[in-house]
Length: 112
Length: 113
Figure 1 (cartoon, rainbow over the protein chains, first blue to last red):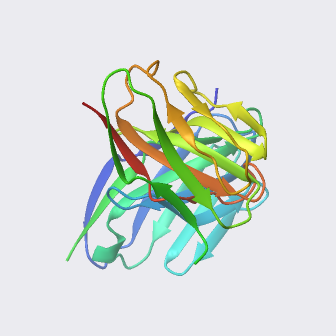
Figure 2: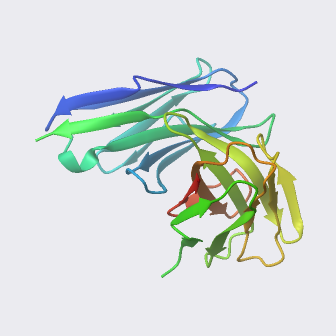
């Protein structure tokens, strides 16, 4: 059974710091991995999608990496800003189940 | 404006009532999904539909029902059989089930009184 874990559950950093969010998954049989952002009481916004054959994707200050063999992904946020404060969720699309499996999320607070 | 709309934003249900949550998309996506989110937990899949007039159970389908009569619409009914329905419900859609980015609606918060 595919399980997705995100550590830490919460993170607080000062503005301007570079930071890394971690995501691990137990089954390497995946089609892709996605990172989402969720603001309090809102829906999810897709940030990056990495296909299983890719190693990383970049969008602006965000860079996501994927190491399928070790079951790990990281989301790197450069020069963090207070507006980056939100919950970040990773999800893997499992080849075996045909479903998107979500982690519990990391809640990020960037202090001015 | 293209996107996904959910209504209502807040919904209150009395014990024993069925309630229906609306989800509409104008992105011309084939696949649509319903997820449930509880505090401190990730999203769990309730039902999904890859094409009109077809849908499959997700991981927590008990006490829920759906229909997909139109490509744009995927309503979710929370029945009285769902023992703990208080949660945040999210609808999503994508071009191809699972392989493409899923686009999410703003959510409906359901509370049982």
